[in-house]
Length: 260
Image 1 (tube, one colour):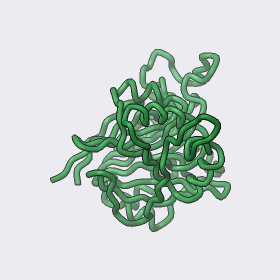
Image 2 (cartoon, one colour):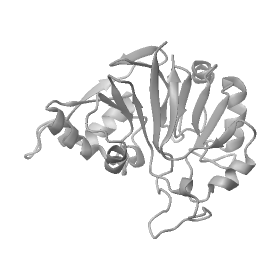
Image 3 (cartoon, helix red, strand yellow):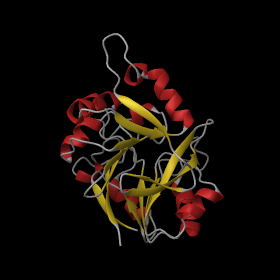
Image 4 (cartoon, helix red, strand yellow):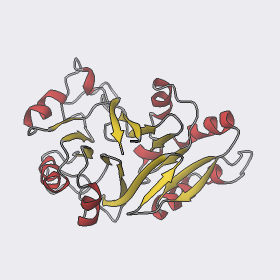
């Protein structure tokens, strides 16, 4: 039996909690689990360390978990709260002495090349930092000794984000809907970390409401569901009290053991 570890390094939306101005919104500042970084996750074994997304809090997240080297970075989609810390990969490259491999779908890789061209080639004194790699979709693949399956999710406005299955757990950040194929890939997992930033807005244009997460899990059948995409309007205790059995709010540095 193979094992890995999944760490949710950031569970918030683009503003983080508190937002600038120490704005906690409806969140109780005395609840430590209401302090939330922007999206980032770590998947690691004894031999391989992967990161999913490099948001604006990436440096502090890597330092918090004492990560100095990476075997790869997987990007879910090109929104700034998921890619804004990409410059920090220059430090990883200098330390490792080799280019950093990044992975994503065509939409994301093309956006990154357009916005961060100096990371992909030598430009104006900047040395190339990263190498782009296409991900396969809907089929198992390996990076190092970590196996996973990536699938596309509807994130609205003609944006496709990537969701993942790692062994008996799934990760679905930033989506408003997952189609039948994606749900079939997730079906049978034990733990699902999933976007519910739509909260109680059923027609939210980019994020799933909590009711849809509950509905989708009727197909997925995860035993434990952690809701992420938590804004300043989503207090940890308040939302937990609203959720059904088997569901609870995610929080920064939540750690899940993966079994294959």
